[in-house]
Length: 259
Image 1 (cartoon, rainbow, N blue to C red):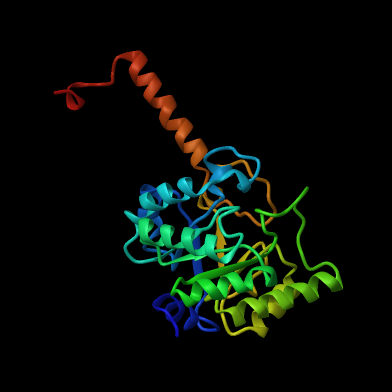
Image 2 (cartoon, rainbow, N blue to C red):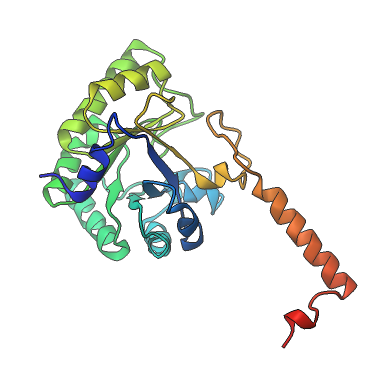
């Protein structure tokens, strides 16, 4: 049985590009909500907000509290929450934690990293009416060492194709393809009936997602696939510099800004 989110996302396959961004707070969610189809409360908040070296340090409480904030700013978009590392190791643990996230954050679905190894868990969650988004390619929760794009070797290509098909058969409503070689991401997208959401995986995906803080120039990431559309860091510095000068000169607060 298709859920509401499944119907909304599936109908965009081959018809309209799906626009996705991350949010970790109400303020950002409010500003992007009108322009995107899907907002992801990603465990990327670990590096973006907490300066963690890996997403593996992000816990369930962090995800829930940030998702509650984001929910307050979402009116139009679908809101998806990343399930953090070590929260879906088996069926019972996954169901318990996903139910908790769905209930407390009022999100529209959750995202799990992995392919064939977690399909039975995904099937179990969907059986209990929990919409699931998949994620293959580079999976930050399990990657070891330096990140490198996937789809270089015949074995990698074979496994990626098998993983995408397996996730589709398990019932996910979409799959994030992270840092997958463009020919492979094109082949995956064309071989399955559910949408693919690319991040560093070429224009051939059905949609795209970026970390909003990267797009806004609030981080110093040098990842190849990130395009900065503005530089808010310089705007912040300029505003703070002007504030300092106003305070030092005594021009702030003037009578206009005083009771």
